[in-house]
Structures are given as structure tokens and as C-alpha cells.
Length: 177
Length: 192
Image (cartoon, rainbow over all chains, first blue to last red; front, side, top):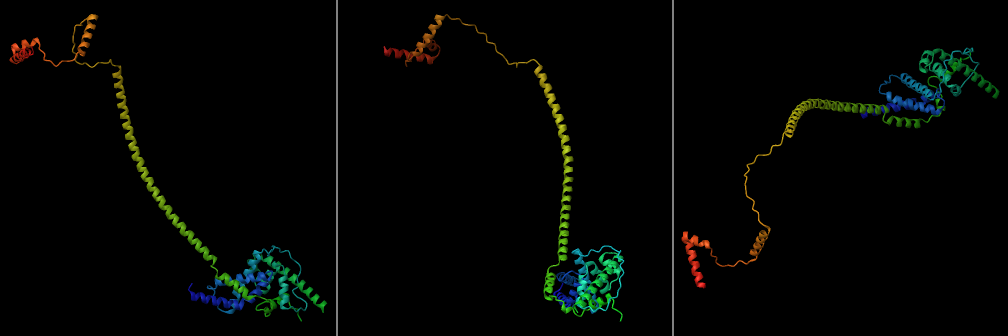
């Protein structure tokens, strides 16, 4: 590759990193177990970005952000698979009733992040993909190589788990007050 | 007031562009340096491509070499087949010659056997038969003769003129001899 194009590519790459690295790091924090893994994910993701930068056309910010988010999510799931942290049983027997409403709760960003990160790996992945990223169960099933029913089951479990945690948090807060 | 759903709470807080990301510590420069190290390192894929290219080139080279060797060997095999045919011909010739030689040897052996079995024939030289009468001598005479011969051999030879009676006969018939005998007479007279 001629030097001028290489230099141009390097500049584009650095610009992308400076703008999006932090947000992508936070995104990966929601998926992986700890901050070291999140840094590893960001590093891997940007290496991939550098490799595919020639093919990518920056049409608008939204598209760029979506492309980068997708890469980070994929790398996060890949790392979880490598670490064998995702153990999604094809379990569809979860029938516990779930009420999607919570008592008047005011959770901060940090609390939300902490609650999500405390979820078991499988629940966390499905909850993030479905609730926050907005993927359908069909897409999640393909991404995690599970059935759609299993994805639904994991989501229900994740919600129940979070609700329980939030209730406990509210109780603790009230006790402190 | 309708309570917020769980999904909405999390989506609002953690969804697109979270506002409070700054409270999360992130060593951006360290990660950037790591990324730069990885990016500037020669790509593994290039290494693979290079390795595959080298393998292909080498395999192609060896394939050509092998084809060349096979072609050479085929040529050698053809030559050898030709040589084998020639050798067979030569062998047949030699075998034919051997047969002939054998026949000759057999013939010679036969002739030799015939010769051996035939009675020996002496070469016929010309022979001259000399018939001499044997002379018998008595032993004392023989001894005396030997003694005389021995004594004669011991006698010193005198350098004296010898006159033989036969000279007279010779001089009578030949003038030279006559002269000789005349000279002898004169010498004798002078000595006396």
C-alpha cells in the first residue's frame, strides 16, 4: 500500500479510536467479566477495525457507531466463548411469572452497570443484546448459537434476577435512610 | 404514576450514548499503544500468504524437477530396453558361436581319441647300415698297446728332419720329392 494512503488510514484509525474508544470500552464492560477483559476486547476490536477500515465507508456517525458497536459485541462474545464463560443450557423450562414493573425506583448509571455486570454471563449476554442493543431473539439465537426459546428463557431469568437485586438494593437503601 | 419497566430503566441508563461514561476509568493511551504495537506488527495473514506462496513455489519447482527426473528415467529405460534387445542378439550370437566351438571341440576330441587309439607309427628316417667286423685283441696285447701309446705321448718331440722310406717312392715318381730326398742326402753327408 502506498505510504500516503497508509498515512491517511492511520489518521482515520486514530480519529476513530480517540472518539469511540471510551464508549466501546464501557460497552464491552457490560458483556465481559472484568475491566482487563474489557480492555482486551477493545484492543482486539480496534485491531479488527484497522484490518477492515479500507472496506468500510464512513457514511454517517450513526453507521460508524453501529459498525464499531457490532465489532465490540462480537469480540466480547468471542472472548466469553474462549473463556468458556457462556454456558447457555438450552433450557426452556423457566416458567416463573415475571412482572415487568418495578416500584418507584431511581437507579443511577453506575448502579445499572453494576447490576448488569453482576448477572451470570449467559443472562448478561442475552439481557444486553435484547434489552439494550435491541436484537431480536432470532438474532440472539444465531449470535449465541442457541435456540430462540432458550434466549427467551435466559432473558426471563435475567429480568427476575435483576428485579430481585433491585428490590434488595431498595430495601438496603431504605434501611440506610 | 405508572412505574417504569425494568427494561426501560436499563435502556435509558445504559443505552445509546451513556452520559456518565467519564466516571468509568479507562487508560486510553495504554490500550492505544497496545493496539499500535499489534497493528504495526506484520500481519499473520500476510505470513500465511507468504508461507503458502513459498510452499506452492517449492512444490511447483519440485514437481517440475520430478517430471524432469521421470522423463530422464523414461529415456534411460528406453535406452536400456534397446540395450537389452542388442544384448539378447549378442547373447544369441555368442550362444551360436559357443555351439560351433563346442562342435569343433567335440570334433577335435573325436579326432584326438581316434589318434590315441591308433597304433603308434614311428617316423621313417633313411637308415644306412654299416657292417663292420669286430676286431678281437688279446688282453696283454691291448695293455701293451696302451703302454706304448702312453710312452709315445711322453717322448719329447724332436725338431729333426724326418726321412721316410716312402719319400724314396715319392721322389721316384715326383721331382719335388726327389729334390727333397736329394737335399736330405746332402744334409746327411754334411753331418757325417
